Image (tube, rainbow, N blue to C red; front, side, top):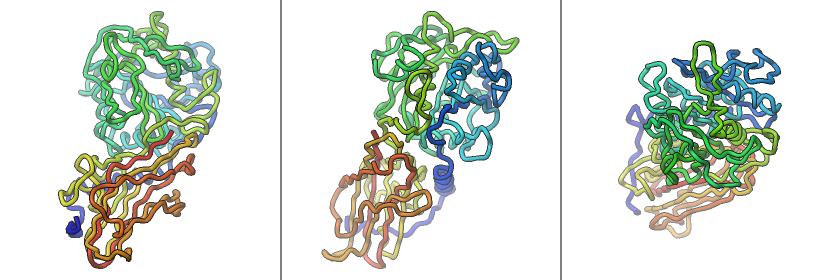
Length: 485
């Protein structure tokens, strides 16, 4: 469309301005507070800052917070720590491969607190009962995106233990659909609004799955004692996988335990808190011992799930690092808001670049990135920071590019688009390609590059469009991806 010149625009709504501010904040955190590199022991943070002890619940590993070792530095029995999750905590502690802490205040990522998420490999959310704040949701999502593990343990709908109007089902769905990082079904599932009274969900047949067949044993069944399930949406995230299903269900419905990935991180979902309950909480709480239920293998499921989320491998509860460790790579797509359908989030961009203007056409959906096209001296940029796991041997960057121009020359590149890789200091590591008005053509063309040489690094992908003083050239980008394996 040679005539698609546009006027220079400023952000004119509060919403657009807020989106850009959130993006800038998210990228600053990404560059300065990625989850720590491989280390033993694996660092696990159990949340107790969102009414996990409200009502009859007691979802803690110990009454000693943040460090359960202060209650007993060398626990041999689950009763050495006091809490309904003490069996879980003590089992990890006894391996010698895990460091366990409890968070009692707001969750942060990139701060100075000892329980800041940047100090951990995995965050466990055991049936939260208050909504996460906007800042907490940004922290959680960026933590996972940059290599952290997230264990989401729900309960049945209506389990509002503190009577604030929200249960774990609503809280988890809010986290996944109402955050500043990626609200376009980032994990590929939603939590069902159900209250299933009882059952023993069975594991799928997959001898290679590390959660079902991990260092802590083989998983055959779990337990529902008033819980829910999840609906999977692999079209939104191809890595989502149901591991245990409610009787009579399979495929994308009735998943009682599911795993997924987001960015460089991993996610696990469990539809009930009863399986992690060891029945030994604080005085006055009547609890249910699902941990030792003889009809299920809940302990193995919880412990293998923790091991997988932390990036551990080998026998005895894990040997080799957590988070983004040196030998692991989960096949996934790393870029957030990769089709721009969330508008000006996740990406950092010049005002007006991410748009749904009808003057150009998105390749898919409604939004796309439009650099330049003004017919005046202009520089537009679009960038996103991403961590490529060190264990990945393939890292394929791709995007669809459409270029139209009013330039008539067949020999001079007046207007250019550079595709570059930068380090966290802003130094250009590589210019992958330079396009110009000479590459104008109808429709979108997919462009692909290997970033495998940057495995183990946090880099910034940056598009820079530079336009001369007359005759517009538009560089239009859509459907980006960074697939690793």
